[in-house]
Structure formats: C-alpha cells, structure tokens
Amino acid sequence: MEILELQKIANEVRKGIVTSVHSAKAGHPGGSLSAADILTYLYFEEMNVNPQDDKNPDRDRFVLSKGHAAPALYSVLAHRGYFPVEDLVTLRHIGSYLQGHPDMKNIPGVDMSTGSLGQGVSAAVGMAIAGKLDNKDYTVYALLGDGEIQEGQVWEAAMLAGHRKLDNLVVIVDNNGLQIDGNIADVNSPYPIDKKFEAFNFEVINLEDGNDMAQIAEAIKKAKAVVGKPAAIIAKTVKGKGVSFMENQAGWHGVAPNDEQYAAAMAELENGGIA
Figure 1 (cartoon, rainbow, N blue to C red):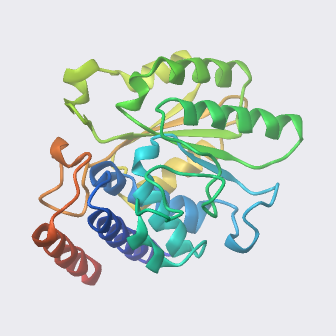
Figure 2 (figure 1 turned 120 degrees about the horizontal axis):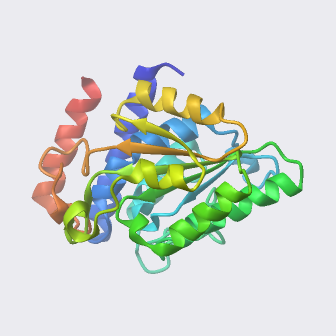
C-alpha cells in the first residue's frame, strides 16, 4: 500500500478515536492518537491477519500492552473490517462489547485482554515462546507506553525474551514523553530506554519519528530482519498527534473532549485528510 494511502487511513483512525472518546465522555485520547500511525501500518501493511479468519493459528499477533489506548486499537480494527465503524460510538457504554480496555473474549481481532500495565508484554512473550515450541512462523507485536515501562514486570518479560532469543517478537515503545502525571522524565525517568533493552539482549531500533509512515516502515523492516534475538523499536511520537490543541499536553492523557472541542478536532482532522 502507498504511504499516502496509509496516511489517509491513519487520519480516519484518528477520527474514530476522537469520535469514540467523545461519545463515551471518557477514555484516553492522547496516547491513542500518538499510536495511530504505528497501528495503522501494522494492520494495513505489515501483519498477516484476516478479519474473516481472526482466530487462524498462523496469524500474526498484536498485544496492546498499554491497554488504555484501546480507542486506537478499536478504530484500527473497525477500519480493517473486524466490526462496523459505526460501533465505535458505543465505546464504554453499558452493554457495548467495546469496553474501556481490550477484551479478547468479546471483541473480534483482539488477541489479549490488557489494561493492567506490564502484563500485556508478558503475554506477548508467552505467545512468542508458544510460536517457537509449535514451529510456527508468526510474529508477535507488542505496543508499550513509555510510562508503562516504569513497571518492573516489563523488565522481567524482557529478560525472558532475551534469554529465549525470541526473534519472532517485536516490542514497540510509544515514546511520546508524557504520562498521566506529566513528563515521564520527571515522574520516574526510564531513560535511556534503548540501552535498557540492549542490556536484556534485544536488537534496538531507534525510530526518530513514530508518526511518519516511511520511517515506521523502515523500522519494522529492520526489526523483522533480526535473527537470534528479540527486537525493540523505540518510537518517538507526539502525544495527541493530529489534534493541535491535544498535542504534547499531558492533560489529554485521560480526558474526553466536550462538544466544542470535538467539533474543532474533527474539523482539523477533516482538513488533515484533505491535505
């Protein structure tokens, strides 16, 4: 798929994120918007998945370890054809299958229920080990938040992944620099992130702009070529990317836009789509 087409899809994904969070009057727009481009590239270009056969044992797996960014995953899955885009407005509503965090039992296309930070990447490591034991050639992708990697469980999982030489595992850190309490460097600095993963025997790819499709493509290509060890992509992104008044603002970590802000955000995304 052409880069421009992927960018257009990512813009539609962002509209879905903003629409669903506004409808729910709750959710996490900032970290969902920062991850929209990476998720779009994975689901529309890279991963071996099929919405009509979403339990195929040979499919690639994706684990949203930063489960609070569920609006991004739901929007990508909907636009990829796993369920109707119209259902995005039911996010977090009573009776809706689109819960506040991913639910593998009720949401088509979700490979792991996540939300408790650190646990998703641990599950992804287990999936990668299972792939090795079953002689499958699928790849497991796990997306982590940079605030999430303050969790000790992340590094226990990384230790095992490196020890088991899981070259069928690609860990991506959404390094937007902000968490619910502010700048990650001020709250509990995880830097240098790349050196930490290297210490756990990962091949590290530093992605300068994790919102740039061409750079994402190159980073994924490098990660897939790694043999004998897991890969970690440290992706510098912009929290709230695509909605100017949300960009680089920690306050938009877990706040829904009101009607006026929603209208402004959607107008901006409409113009972005035209551009």
